[in-house]
Amino acid sequence: MARRAPASERRVRGTERRNASSDLLARVLSKDERERQADEHGKWLKDPSVVEVAAALAKLKERIPKAALPAIYRDDDTGRSSEKHVWSLPTSTCVLVLVYRKDLFLEAGLHRPPRTWDEVLEYSKKLTIPSRKQYGMGLMTGGSAGWMAFSFMASNGAKTVEQDADGKWRVSYGSHKSAEAVYYLWRLLHEKFEAEGKPQKGSTLTGWEDIPILYQQGKIGMRLDYLDDNVLADLNPQRDGFAPFPGPVAGMSGGELNCTMLSVYSGVSPAEKIGAMRLIWYLTSDEAAALRTKIMVENGRMVGTQGTGQLIPRKIDSAMLTRPRL
Image (cartoon, rainbow, N blue to C red):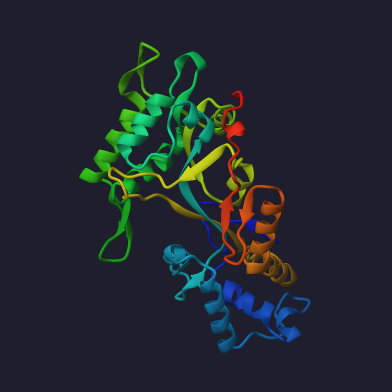
């Protein structure tokens, strides 16, 4: 069976080579049916050759974003295996971006997304309307305060972890650039300004599951979210826009790159392992990506351009932007 790997693991459970993703994919792709069959004791009838496994590993690595490869194709941290493995296979790539309400921007006289930290703060203040309980920015905090802070740090060129001389990953956010990012985040949350003729402390609302809901209700002008299939399916391209999260100066940007991933659990039967790998291989294929894109286009989420295969937002209807707020 296929399952979404826990965030703490993001890898295939089990350390034997015969449970590795490359071995299972070699079996799925093999022309020899015996490589996918097992006896009554769960032992494979035939193993794939070294050449087949190597070819399968190459195919797996082709489907992993280059930036994510070191985290996915790596050694066993427990030391129980001396081989590198592809521990999980990404089913989609998640990039944290700035999502904003075009209708609220238009009402505030803002005609493009912010390009610098100063503009984000300026926009956030302009979008804050206390009488409507409307905030310029919404951030998911609580247990995810560090998650939100990461994009501010990355956009300033700060690093949160780095490899030491022994190849171990160590916390490294005790830097001046990190301090600048945290101070800027503090300004969004606490800096005083005037809104509707009255003193206002902070232009950013913090919360958790209520942030996306309040954004949908028009109570938040900007927020951070993943640009992936699920978010694109929920966004209204006539109302919502997205842009890279800005850095301190124009043209400087950075943020989180993540992946949703699937693994094969080593504790199931050989037949279930084969079935799970077949499913994962399909979900990460060009065929599946084309089908997802087709469904999104047919449901009016995006418009396909002829010849290039690219996607562009559907043309904006000005009446949609000026409609009454939800």
